[in-house]
Image (cartoon, rainbow, N blue to C red; front, side, top):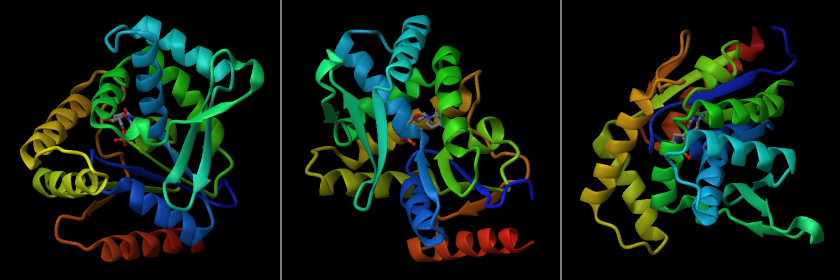
Length: 239
Ligand code: DC
């Protein structure tokens, strides 16, 4: 193994439970957690606020480059949320940061992140950020292209999935628990639309990476899913 501690890559479709599972694995292993979806979500949110269209690839690339250059986005580990995301306020002179962790979890921003993430300009900027965060190992990264593009040489790769119906059911319960008024049918339609968009894009589409272990959690509890994955990481780490 080239690194002392492995890179654990978790990819899969929306609502498969990647965030919760990644958080639990990172805690159990004492690894850093990198939520790459939060980066795309943050770009979508800032674009919306600044009036940059989610369809405008070059302008979004510029915006993402600016955010990275100014170190305007920061990601902190949070026991409850997984990752807390903060944005440097504009103008940045006073260095104050706004907590955007809740704002980036809204359904319209989820959709925006999926749209924004189809642009190669945006992906190349965030790719660098993700590689920088993970290259030393001892890290769990979750997203859509970690095992295929960001770290094709990751020591441990998972493709975590579940049926669309089950994923929508889980997502719907989460949203309702947060007090949002959304129907199950709307959530299912969102999940399916995001799947189609994430799998169908030309740049870094969502797919199972070579060598990734497929984990289908449709009929597994959360604890069973985590146990299966943790066992695999430990087995690989021991070799
Ligand atoms: O995992 P998430 O729901 O927070 O991700 C939001 C969107 O960001 C998702 O629909 C696709 C995009 N994404 C991506 O294209 N590549 C990643 N590595 C992570 C997320």
